[in-house]
Length: 191
Image 1: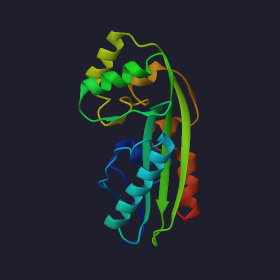
Image 2: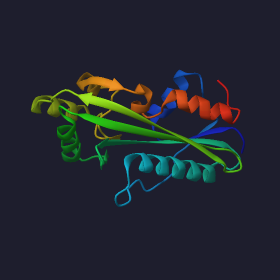
Image 3: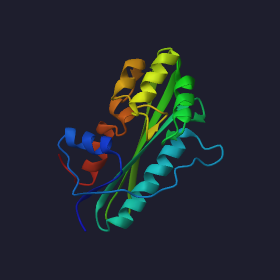
């Protein structure tokens, strides 16, 4: 296969690409263990997982230019989970984020048809207001937190919790567009 492939099951990443006029020729959902290694730093984890997803995607779409990304939410060196379906886990994340700043690191990896990789990682600082129990309950009822790093999606209802954001908004959503466009352009993918 040739062309441009997005290796992600995230509808947000596909929508972000579409918002700037990029449509992958194919979307694949690679299976990668996302558990952090012992003492692994957030940036290193995001970069490792983005590259692993790109390589797994290349295995599903040989000969293509493959784009993958991974987002990690952290408070200091503490990495928060991607909340899959456990409201108690999402609640614990929101309680930890309440009234404090945290970091969102999104790494992007692009592989060419020969497996040569280029990567970028973007760090964004996000500050949340102090959340009341009712606000947390209300957010959990939306189910927007399912499948989200750190238990929230800034592009939805949780956007109202953000006091400040310094860095890449699209990186917090899941794909820093500036860096992504430049990486893809280096491989000849154009808008």
